Structures are given as structure tokens and as C-alpha cells.
Image 1: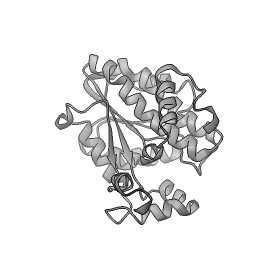
Image 2 (image 1 turned 90 degrees about the vertical axis):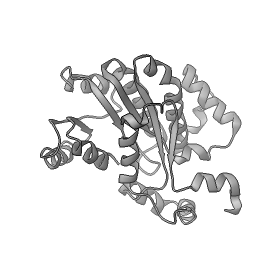
Image 3 (image 1 turned 30 degrees about the horizontal axis):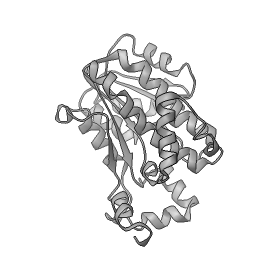
Image 4 (image 1 turned 45 degrees about the vertical axis):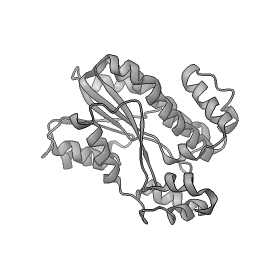
Length: 255
């Protein structure tokens, strides 16, 4: 999803700072985009490192941020629970706090949650996640951290909590913060998860749009959210899921 987002913003002629672990992959994308974008720079680093936000700010060399599209994340087959949570939530939480003073007026931060966040139905767990996001108290979520699938879902629900929590601080600076919840997207990550999970494959077959989504269908929403047309959208999560959560919410196990 990061690549199509970068392509869309490059087509607007925006200067870009591309971030990833893999320097060679970043440079390849940067070369592709430079004929279309303004200046394109790269930052090869581990987003889970506590130093990452300051490395990113340093790479900006004082230039303000107009839009942050934060697509980095790990899915359940990619790592263990603690690492998944560290990348998906803890790194995101640090980044959102660190970049706030560095936006230009009218800027927008777009985070990526997941439809998995909407599949957590236990009110006690949902309350524990909200408590954690607001206070840092981990007691109610600690038991889920050793299970990659649950750590993933909890981390993504907590990302939605970040957006809700930070909307006032961002709004006070003339900024917005939003998240997008992708459904089942036809990316390498999405295909790997489907291959490993029979239940997930069954749910993909039930999507009302009768297909997986495409990365550009997430990128297009991110582009809209960072445009003046979305100037009153903040503090919320936008589902881009082909209708699957609506189906499950109304039809449940009979879907």
C-alpha cells in the first residue's frame, strides 16, 4: 500500500521522504518516482527503533510535513506477538507524537488500522484496549501479546484509539489525523495471510464486492484524506473493506 500511495503523491509533484527497512528497495522506488515528484529522499531504518522518529525528523532537514502516510506494519504470519505489537502500535504511537510539531498548517496524518480491529467483540477487551491507549496500563491486554493473531488485532484497534485520542492535539495545530481500515487486500502480505489461514480464505469468499481489494484502493483514500476535500474528517477510522464488516455485523456466523 505504501508504493501506490507514493506514486499518487509523486504524481501531484510533491516532495517525498520514503521510509522502509530495505535501502535498495527504497532507492529503486525513489528512482521510479523522481521524474514525476519534487525532491525524493529515502530513510532506511527500523520504525520500531526508539530513535526512528528523530531520524525521520532529521531527514526532513527542517522542511514541514504536509502529509504523513504511515503504512508500515507486521501481520500475524510475519513475526511473534511482541514484535507485531511493537511495530504496529508502539512505533506508531511514538511517531505520531514526535511529528506533531513538524507539520505545516492544514496537514494530515493517515495511519493504517485493519478490519481485524472490528472482529474483537468482547466488551471487556475493547475497554482494556481503550484504557491502555489512554493510560498505558497493559494489564488488560498483556495476556494476548503471545498470540500473533490477537496481538495484531489488538494493535490495530489501539491504532484507531491513537487517532481518536490525538485528534484534539492535532486539531489545535490546524491538523487532522485519520486511520484507514483495509479489508482483505491483494498484496504480498495479504496473500501470505490468506494462504496460512483457512478461516481468512473463507471470509474473503464472502466479501460483498466478491474480490480482494487492491493497494491503490487504499492509496486513493489516503490521497483524498490528505486533500482539502476531506478538511472536516479527523479523529475517525475509515473502513475500506468491500463491505465485509457490515456483512458480518448484520449476518454474523450465517454470512
